[in-house]
Image (cartoon, rainbow, N blue to C red; front, top):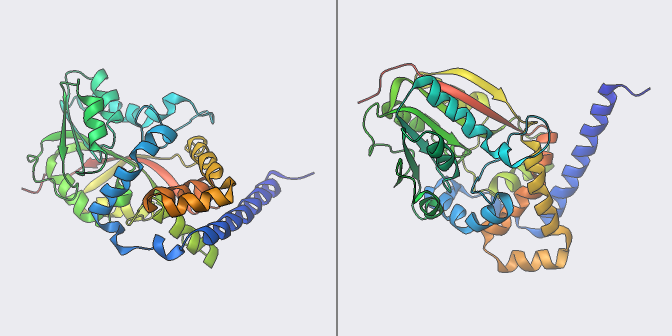
Length: 322
């Protein structure tokens, strides 16, 4: 009789073989060196990535404007799973009774629309980079009187007042930062003492152990123009260094897999016809087709243990820096 441990080991081995095969395929189709770019830490590149990919996110990822993965607590992907992370923010609003909330890296505005409709007496501010996808957020939120959108970089929050917000949050945006200590210092200034911050994101779970995993990391992170991915403990330490305390966290790595697998299906469709894929790689914007490489590897990166996904709530345990 096969034990559960044996079955898990067999699944892990099969995932590793499939991961290696897909990395090898991507190496045939792409110049791997183009995925290792120091300018991925430049906010202008980040904005360009989202500008080039914004329609792809809308049409292939989520029609309602959610740019993040859903959290499926029952293992089955439903449209409402993309709202799970903002439901958590909604509970923070209720718990604190705050009347002003800041979303950083607001994307296409779906999170703010969900919250603004349910909390009409709360003022919401969304910040995102200029020339990225904030135009989509403006269209989605044009009829929301309790939402204000501003352009800016979350490493510089000087346009906001000291202790202006009682709750702040970011969804799959902090992974673009290569200076997270600066981010948390800026956040500390604008968040009330005792104010709460929710971050939901993917993280490096371990270091590559061979060349296949090293190259696979380049494809996976470079395909999303990520220049700042770190481990979860490292990011938490950046926050603690600015006197934030973790008041709640949850590893939802398995719960995001249903929506991750939906993205994988799109990547598989793209690469199924090799001649067409190579032609599109040559013709379409590099940042757009590179995203297909991320999609092609997405689920397997989690199954082989390279990445994890956490939802975390932090409390500002010190007065703001004036």
